[in-house]
Amino acid sequence: MRLTPLPADEWDDEVRLALSVMLPEERLNPEGAGTALSTLARHPRLTKAFLRFSNHLLFRSTLDPRLRELAILRIARRRNCEYEWAHHAFIGKAEGLTDDDIDGIGRGVVSDPFDQVVIDAVDELDELSTISDPTWAALGEKLDDRQRMDLVFTVGGYGLMAMAYNTFGIEPESGH
Image (cartoon, rainbow, N blue to C red; front, side, top):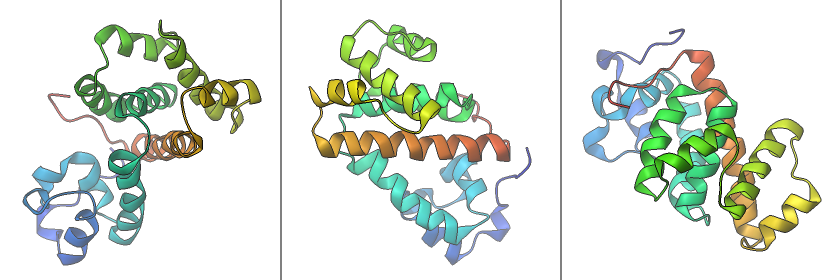
């Protein structure tokens, strides 16, 4: 691990304020925040800014939560981010993804045609930094413009998190 979680004795008001964007008061401590957020707490100003954006992606996005988790899992697999994969496999199941869905997302091949369009969009964004016209049009059959925008930003935001988590050496907590 290149960066370790911020030790409890270094948590101050600035750290708690930064994390309060994402966490309720009872979780504003190293144990409650978890490994990733406790590591990000080493840079409170950056963390606060980034968590505001992440808060939108996770809690205010116009995407259906199941599709959001499908997209997050796909970018996590493409970026080989075990932390993101473990956490969002758990969240994905709560949002209706099955074990078979999750296995298919990891391989890039799923049985539902629209889910496959979303996977293809994630793959295109990751490979080309754009979505092709045919895939954009196929997404538009079920998603409006705001939802397609949220999809692009979800893939980008979680791709960025995967790069950070992988670089910092953040690993899943036991139980995930």
